[in-house]
Image 1 (spheres, rainbow, N blue to C red):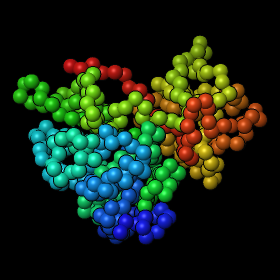
Image 2 (image 1 turned 90 degrees about the horizontal axis):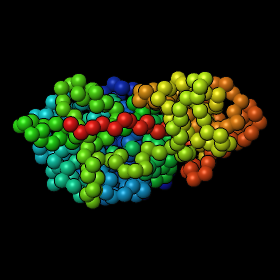
Image 3 (image 1 turned 180 degrees about the vertical axis):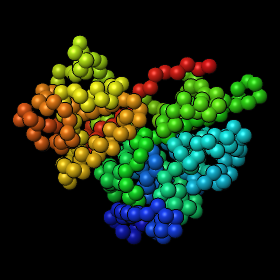
Image 4 (image 1 turned 60 degrees about the vertical axis):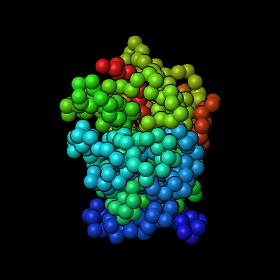
Length: 380
C-alpha cells in the first residue's frame, strides 16, 4: 500500500548526517515507500527531484499526474552507482564509460539504449533512456535504500522553476506527493546536462548536447570529448530524447525581460509598475540597479529571514551561469537590494507589491529563477 493510502498528509523526512550508516537508517522507511509505489521528493546536487520506482509503470504515471507533465517528455533514471547502469541500459559504450568515469557522480545525464524492463512511460516510448548518478549523498543513499532505480524529474509543476529546497517542493506540489526528504538547499541550482552519443564518422563517437546544465560544454571538451549541438530536426519526432526541450520551460512566475546598459552603465529597466524578471550577463550589474528584489510569492514567507535565504541561494545559482535574474518593479526607491519582499509588503515609496503581472502566473512561494539563455553553438 502506498503512503498516501496510509496517511493523507505529506511526510517530511529531515536528514542530519552524511555518514553512510546514519543515512541508511534515516532513509530506510522512505526507501520502502518508493518500493511500494510512493512518490518521494529528494535533494540532488542540482535541484530537488520527484522520485518513483523507475520499473513500476503505475508509480511513474503518478509522477506525470503530479506534475501535469506531458507523456512525450521523458524522465531521467537515477542510480546510486555506475555499476548499476546495466539494470536499465542494454549498452554502455567505451565513450559512455569514459564520460561516467570523468563526470559521475555529478550533474551529467547520458542517453543510452534502454532495456525492456524500463517502461515506455519513462522514455516517452523511445528506445533510449537518460541515466545519471547524482553526486548528493542523500540522493544516493535514498536510491540504495529503495534498491530500485528512481525515475526523477524536478519536483515542481511542469514548465515552472525548479525547486532547490524541500519547502519549495511542498509549496509547489503539496499533497500531490507522499513525502519529501529534507537534505537542505541544493548547491548547483540548475538541472543536469544531457548528452547523447552518435557516430563521429571516424570510427568513434561524439556527444550531442541535448540540454545545457550543471556540466558546461567547455568542461566536456576539456575532458577530450567532441561535442556538437543537437540538429535542427532533433525535436520533430513524437517524443523528446531529453527533458527541457520545449518552448516554455524553467519559466519564472512573471514576464522575463532581457535588458541592456544605459549611458551611465546602469541597466535600462522597463517603465512599468508591474512585477517582472530581468536577466543580464553580469550578476553584479543587476544587483547594482536601483531596484528591490522581490520573491513575489503567493503567500507571505514564514519570516523575512527565510525569504532572504531563498534569494541568496538563487543568486548563487545565477552566478554559476554568469548571469543574473531579479524580480524588479518601478518606481523604485531603494538603491540596492537587501532581501525579498512578499506580496502586500510596502516599498520605500509606499506602494504595494504585487505577486502577479499581466499574463504571469502566481509564484508558489519562492523566488523567480530562470536559467539564462546560452549563446547558440554551431554544429561541427
